[in-house]
Length: 278
Image (cartoon, rainbow, N blue to C red; front, side, top):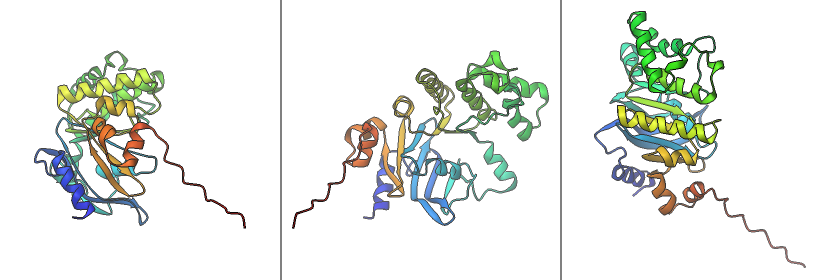
């Protein structure tokens, strides 16, 4: 059996591409830039209400994979299905409808600095709906309330902390009641307490609203706290090298790279050459 076949078989056993209840499905995906392949033959699926984390070392293709999954980049091969629809193939109104089923929070939060939090969260409603202003403001306030920012609707992003900006960005990503939220490094730049508060928010939203979260992260503390399942990418092997519960992978993975990652261990140094005197 080929390595790809083994990966697909194991993914099916652990809740991967074989699942019928998948909200997101990645099939045979290859991604890269300018003809350079970063990842190839990537297969996995994400279930409704699951907190799914994409992790790996620097340069392993985590953020590139995410950008392919949300339709910013077209994959070199394969496809990404959101609620059964191909994100790349969808055009016109079908694509517009598909984009409404997903929300994205970028690493920096990407809030518009000249707009209040209320205006930032209201923006997707202005673009994608025909609701009147009163209805849009009501929804925006409800989303900010969900993330604990109901008292800051009139503040500009520069007037609140980095952690609050991340929460406001999540509120904006939820504006259209998406089925899936994609978060890129949500804990980046946050202190441990603020990061833990954000982890608790993600879990609460996932459990109470059955929102599916797909998160790019390399913060081990957050991964252990929130992840139902992870996939690990390796830039050397250009693909998925592990999938499952991060605690199980940490304790039982037969792969040396996976064990080193979870235990924060340095690779074994290469043996020094022995020079014999003539």
